Image 1 (cartoon, rainbow over the protein chains, first blue to last red):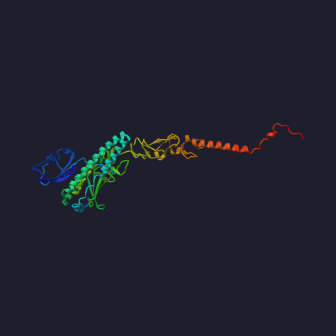
Image 2: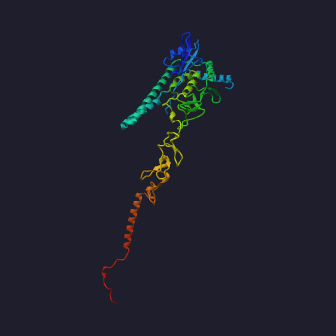
Image 3: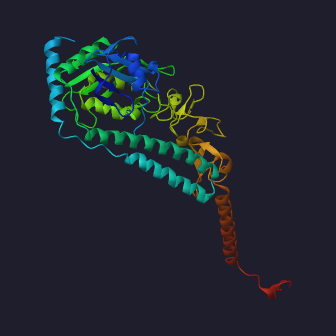
Length: 76
Length: 347
């Protein structure tokens, strides 16, 4: 089934991807962010917070945003 | 939000217009020239320090060069992501998705409002506290019809607690209402270009709640205190003092004590005696009556002359006195040698 996957880490990714029927949010996270820890991200399905065992549906919008994003200073 | 449906519809129309108008004309990303300039400056400093044999300075500048190169590397990565993104066909949010984003933002711990006068969509964060310092709430103001600008949004401090050294720096990464996006730049710009407002505002909020030590306009350990009037450094409340002449705050490194009146003074209110080089406040320095050099009371005599001028004047007075004596001696009548020792003639 197709879902919209948005990863706001690094350079950013937003596109439709294919996932197997019955895929949970936790499984998707492990597949797409293998080196990340869920507690370091804001994870939303259809813009709502859900539990990690939430089963994804066709057309769902999943977004992953790091909780810590470091700014910098603009050189003068 | 007053009259949400109608107002929201207008906002969505403005946003979608801005997004759709930009889809065929992507602006090229700015190249990291400033970061490169900073690397060059650091490298030149190292070369200069080595040339002069300043080993400590060379080591410090080498560490700075590493930091500058890492920053350049990060900025190149950001530009690369943006360039790749420009080459990838982009989808923009539909009006329905824009609407859902705005509704979802209201369900987050944000305050959402529309400033129709300024044409801005405003999202207010919760108070930002970094390392125990409360910076207050920030309002992210997005210009609805200027999404293609280089800076289509600004970050306004609603409860300003700026750095002591610079009132424009309201957050370690915000100067003059401009947020330096750092490692969030590429994904944040992508979210904005595609109209993913929920992601955009969430990322800006996360940036504000994250402190990047070593990459701030002003570091948090320099945030509070007072700025030294002479050197500009931030001084802790327990360490600064006031100049007794002008009342400005000065740091321990910049204050001097006048050796005549024992008052603490800043650089602007003090100078050195031009004879003995001791520091004195400007009130304790007086000009020599002859050469006008600024001298302390110990280097001026009771005639307000410095030693050199006093000696010159004394010498001049002596010479003048000798001349006068010589001139006076010439005007007295001569004694006739022929009349010496003879008895007076009889009448």
